[in-house]
Length: 193
Image 1 (cartoon, helix red, strand yellow):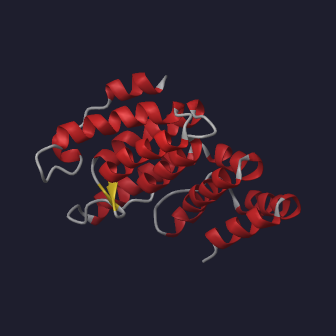
Image 2: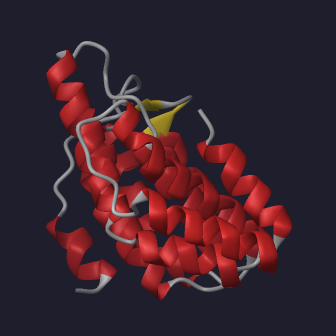
Image 3: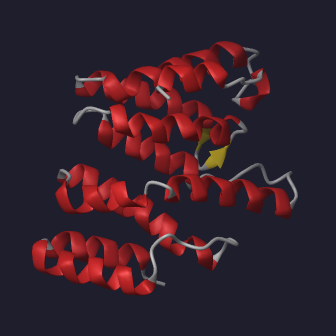
């Protein structure tokens, strides 16, 4: 499924994004357009501008708007279309949404369910984050470390089983230590208690 097909299936309400000025529908459409266009961006300034059209709408200062869980599949799907220029911005957008905190007015159960669903979705591409940690650019690896740490540490606070067990993690860390000590240190510190 291409990103365009996914995005056509996403229905956002005005209040799924910040709508304090009554421009929620316009803001939501701009965000969906940015999700469609970001993976194919080839100019850093364009990719950065598209990133901010997502981040400033789906997540504001760590607070997740209802649009976040709805758009996360499109962001993750965009990884496989992304350019070398757009990928770090896309990875950051995925992290910001997946690590965001749902509305505190929701019940604890509902907040936990939303966060669990988002981490499970992101965990579905754990292999890709490991690939980027080993073979990606420094910027890609930095974002991939953050995402992998989010996945690995999720069981400490959410009812989720991580797709990478302790033995596999140790093999990854040992391999990174030999291949790229700096990335080993980044991942080790990101997952530390």
